[in-house]
Length: 224
Image (cartoon, rainbow, N blue to C red; front, side, top):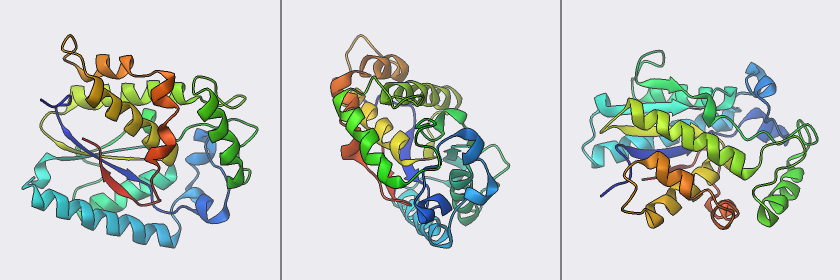
């Protein structure tokens, strides 16, 4: 028996202008700026991902009426989700597309904002040692896991029997996969709702492994 009421796919945004420039853009203030949307290569990646998603829907005989796109409010994820919706002929301002703030990028803190991507290694080193402690002023893995669990609870409460495409960012999607896979493996008979299971699995041994679920920009993957 599935732990969720819906089927889920995840999509990391296409290559963005910050990716191209090699800088970290993780605050809501910066992330929603229009100049930080997709680079031309990222537009192409998003269109390819949309084609792959359509192929999966067709292979599983899932009608477009059952598709929902839930996305982060950042410019690069909104741009990606919009391109996928356009490819599928779904109105982006309609009920099948929903922005969810809890799907936003992980905030890495003021010590890393707008600095080089090379700094990610420092952050992931901290995560590996203790995922309950984040970089100074930024979110820990546990912080992100908590809001992703809330996002999943929101989606599960609003939709049932749908094919959900979650469009988000590298670290959040790594963390989401870590907790969802743990939930799927360690579900207890006493729990019958996803929110309760996800709360149980937010422990250091699970959270510290998130890097093994890394996605490339524009990569589509089945979640559950």
